Picture 1 (cartoon, rainbow, N blue to C red):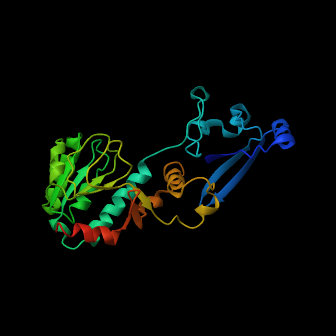
Picture 2 (cartoon, rainbow, N blue to C red; picture 1 turned 90 degrees about the horizontal axis):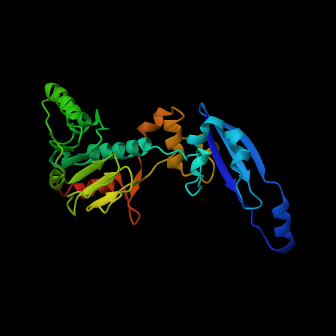
Picture 3 (cartoon, rainbow, N blue to C red; picture 1 turned 90 degrees about the vertical axis):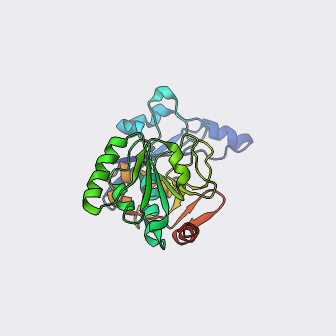
Length: 275
């Protein structure tokens, strides 16, 4: 079961209304919502005095306190054991799925120089898929052994090859860079390179960086999603906690860098200048 917490703080008002609200007991309601084989326990805490009593909701949350779905602005005391749910896995799938769709739709994609920035080595199995479209691929990873084993298998089957290295400098050769992990270091990326990242980089990154993805949430899930939670955050929980692995096949319709949005088609048009 997935547990979500919403906190509502009604307007305090003035004078007698403020006094009445300060005397009212805070209210807790629990609702079970079900859709497509998923059950969400939605706890709504209404605080009339503006204060949150963790002890009052603890019995409803129980063992879910360390993976609780809630708005990002909610802050819990460290000693409470409460922790907002977060996982990068779904965002990584959105990023890599859109990248594959772009390569599939690009004319002459074999002429695009591709970079996979994967320091943690989390993209095993992905190299074979991009080698279907690109002839020049650089994998930048600190886990080179796993990628080399994968490359050996691909070479035996298809005769394809790639450069597996720890050297970040090789990214300077790349027209298109896929980053399924967080970019937490300065990278030698070209100003005209296009970067699809799973998350907004921690440090300033050159190139055209897109890290926000838009997609259509499958029907039914909208009925069980708390209204203050974003669709990508809620689907991340469904994918990670609710075993809704079919969500991992979603291809975003658009991506954004905060100032502009691009579709698969518009990105293809941009990349085709390199091909």
